[in-house]
Length: 414
Image (tube, rainbow, N blue to C red; front, side, top):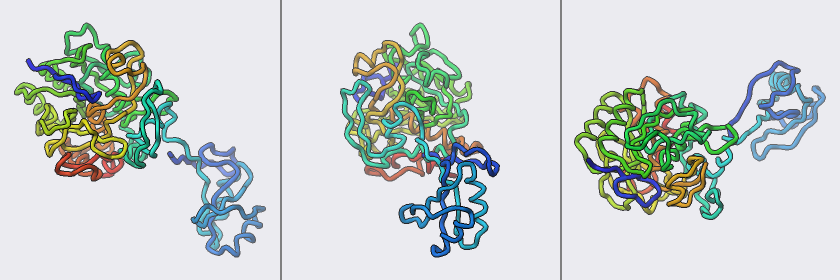
């Protein structure tokens, strides 16, 4: 019986602006999704602007950059009525609301989630003791853009790991089924790894706390295959895969590694043949050594990038690695009780950073789930092909990995 290793926290222990808008009746109270008391107007003939506006009791306002549009002050509640009236005038090219732009998420640590939206920000770990240098703008998976198409629509993603904490309100409610395939006495995550991985996939968004999952509308099947010390077996993992398939998983994430096992390979192939997409971490050895289950042909193997879109120094690499995703200082959920990783890596309870291909793998699993939810009739082979073909050309293609770094927005546009 071979032991599993985690592929997260860099040192591997062997075996282990949304635009909102809605029409309201003319004269109604101002729509909170549009800026009250002002609209945007662009004229075909600037010389006629003042006269047209004067007919409606309005005056010219400041220009908007190089767009040619102007901000026009109007009575609150009359925005849509005046837009309609102005749009009928042939000298008006267009009139439209000045939409309210909100942050993509109001989650406390969203600004630190460069993997979802990278503005070149600097940040720290939760305790403020580990500074993260500025990254490169847009070195991210375009999750925010993908959310305009789909949020996951309840797609089930199985996280086969150390469990998901029942005391973190950002991820616990997303768990729809639990099973324990270890010698640990219950499903609770006392190691911390599984909670972090699950949060990357599907942490609740826009709830005013914590973080947002890449597939913010996905649900989680929590298969505990790693004990409270972070260890497991190939048989336990195989059992977890079988359970996930029977429980309706569309995607299975495995942020762990083990030696090649015929039993495990059979479980993987059975899951693939049942129509599931399987994703696994490539490992943190900074070598080309194949790690399983990632190296099985029916599994998407994932390497890690940093916030500058460079290969992470620790990431396993090679042509057998299919794609990459951010895996350095990735913010996510942790248990709100004592857990092993907190002690070993000085992480905070609740939320903190984690590094490793263990963090990259669930990003890819979540992207696959988003892609599938955007095209529910697709097969698992079509979803895998979409995820791999829609990557951005990051790293040394053909050396670091076969494709590039995943792009959720491209993956959801079929």
